[in-house]
Length: 239
Image 1 (cartoon, rainbow, N blue to C red):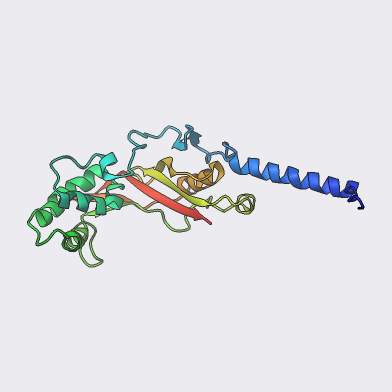
Image 2 (tube, rainbow, N blue to C red; image 1 turned 90 degrees about the vertical axis):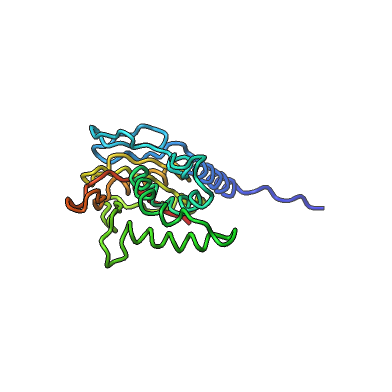
């Protein structure tokens, strides 16, 4: 039986190069350092948190993952009230104390009643639609509260999926939470859903360099809206 021939030197070299490339790509994808610096005028605090140098960031980093974490539910809440708050989590995340104050004034009177059956969700959702109209308006009515949003295409450093990570199969969804002060200026960014240090930093840069609309609340109709700080969540899938 003939023995298999030994690989040629050229084949060995190509095999080694391929292995080195694979190792380097893998290490790059798993690297704990993004190599991406915050924008000029920002500081990296570590643990997926950036702040604008010199800005007041009091209360900028909060756990807004659930209504329980936010601290707007307690043992006195009925099942209906708790369900309603959970359905409005996206709104609570923008300004917890103000939204909860508006919830008590607008939602509780509509929701605090008896329901015909145990499947109360449909009835509650109908009432919540009226609450949302009262708070946010419906395009025709004057709203009581307006949350801040990032203007589309306003970022000077939009997140772009690097080919190296795409080819390495690094996928997932990155979410960051930006604290925007009453002057519409982003002053803190925090990663709340992480995939990879590089992808995280790219989304953070987009959030930090975006232009935001004003958030406001009407506390006295005679005085108009009052500008307030807001939290803005940005989620980008990399697939």
